[in-house]
Length: 165
Image (cartoon, rainbow, N blue to C red; front, side, top):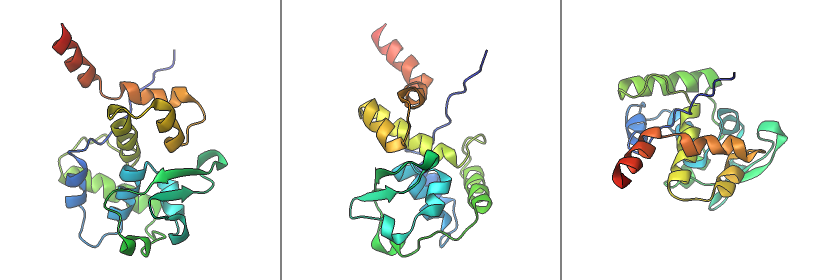
């Protein structure tokens, strides 16, 4: 029997705490914003160049599985941020900076950089975005992969249950 763990998703109230806990001029903030605000994987964040950034969208070329996709440009993205691309920090450094920010902000110690991407998907599902749209934005081939975000916050399901029964 395969055990499937629920994704650990950064929630909207936590993201500003992560940003606040990151050093002021650290380009890690840009990486965090791209993962949380556009649902990008760490490798996709690292591969971004200024020409990928459009007025309201980001073009992801050759993402996981060699797939291209279009994702929303994060709210709050400024033109000066585009000029900071590509991000020069190493993958390991970005992961370490994320863990450090979470620790400073006293957030879930099990969060990983990928929890930002999980937060993007969970927010979309909870906001009522159709699962097929979320699948497209996440770059998932199989809708069942996207379906894990329907179960990402079991406490919300329990709360809904309590409201009705």
